[in-house]
Image 1 (cartoon, one colour):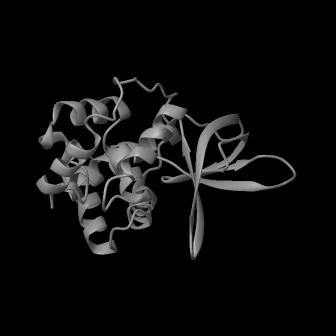
Image 2 (cartoon, one colour):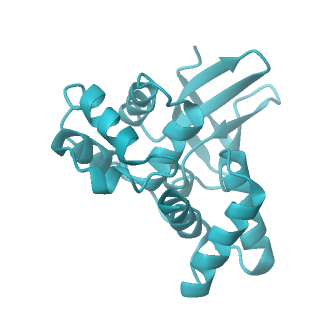
Length: 200
């Protein structure tokens, strides 16, 4: 298990960052918009990580702290929840909000997660209510530079496709958010689009 990674941030995308951990090796680390917002290109970063191995892939996920990583792992103990849905969950709901929703059985909040309906939300509550710890706020740094125009839209759509959504619904969700908040930064745009997809 790769428990953590530390090194200079070579680049930052909407759903991942590349961290150079030495010896000329750059690791693509998938993370939530909130975690990525705390990174700065050219600056050193340290992330708690988890390597998920599948038959056809190895994906490294990064987190702002160990507690967020543990929540990511805990979500996947629920039937039907894989890494993509777990990451999408943490993208829509910060750890504190998620823990509170699970402990209080707040189905309305949980159904904001894309791909989670009422029955799935009930299953999350039943299986995780007694396992979540008291909410722990997660602090992040300043927001990254804003990407504007079509490039911003295309990058968010690409990030949604990377999370498992098909292109057409992803484009519709992003366009819907931009229609209401045309100046939204990429992280906010991605979070809002995920929420919108969760309602459809």
